[in-house]
Amino acid sequence: MHQDQRAQAPLSSSDLLRFLRTGEITIKGRMPWSSNATFLVELTAAGGELTQGGSTDGESVGLERMHGVYKPGRGERPLWDFPDGLYRREVAAWELSNMLGWGLVPETVMRNGPHGEGSVQRFIDADFEQHYFTLYEDPAHHEALRTMCVFDLLINNTDRKSGHCLLGRDQHIYGIDNGLCFHPDPKIRTVIWEFGGEPIPAGLLGDIERCLEGLPGPLDPYLTHDEIDGIRRRGTYLLERAGFPEADPHGRCYPWPLV
Image 1 (cartoon, rainbow, N blue to C red):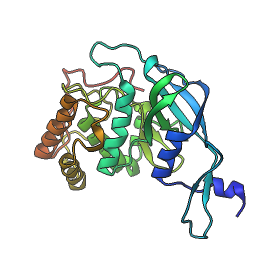
Image 2 (image 1 turned 30 degrees about the horizontal axis):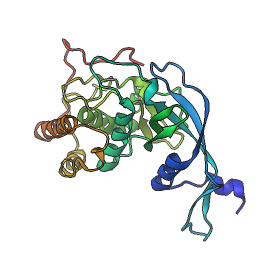
Image 3 (image 1 turned 120 degrees about the horizontal axis):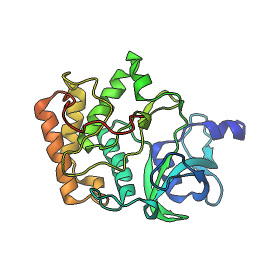
Image 4 (image 1 turned 90 degrees about the vertical axis):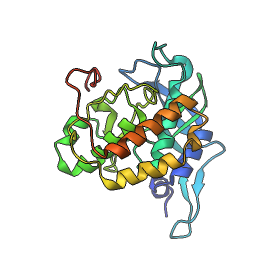
């Protein structure tokens, strides 16, 4: 097998996390339209190639570099209703998505970088012409978008813009920009209201019930006790309601801008 073919083979999530934690970071540029400092970075394997054993042909799978999104804490704009450390919530969102088994958030870690401690997330190679409103037009995406909706209700997402839903080249839908989440008080602002009044699928409810039993688990380093209690309250509410809420026409339930 040629090296360029090996480099294209998929790595496991644990291998990608290890790469995100240990790769050498080079800043390639600042991401546009971000209110906080957000950088596109290239991660290079420290000391050579990251390998994953156990491929079917007996050879290892190699990865020398990958792109990521780096959000340093010192580049955050102060907010009146959220404490500093939004990057910790980015990591917590990945951890919770992983606990649920939903795979909505790209692999995300907390580590030091060129501008200090922050989050580093796997960059998603996506079709950037697509976003929530275009994805919703295809019923084939509705199951994934329902899952995204439940996830945002659980994490109390205050900023789920349409452009924060990405269709990866792998045809998987990802939710990015999850820093404004986990506030203990109700603050949901999202564009995903089309499923209001429908029942929440039983499989998602079962995942939530199992997840609540495992709290705080890996969330403990990133969230306060009040924020984790908020997850429990919202999860319990979703289990009891078993249905998608509808948008409050008199409330501030949509983010701005929408896309």
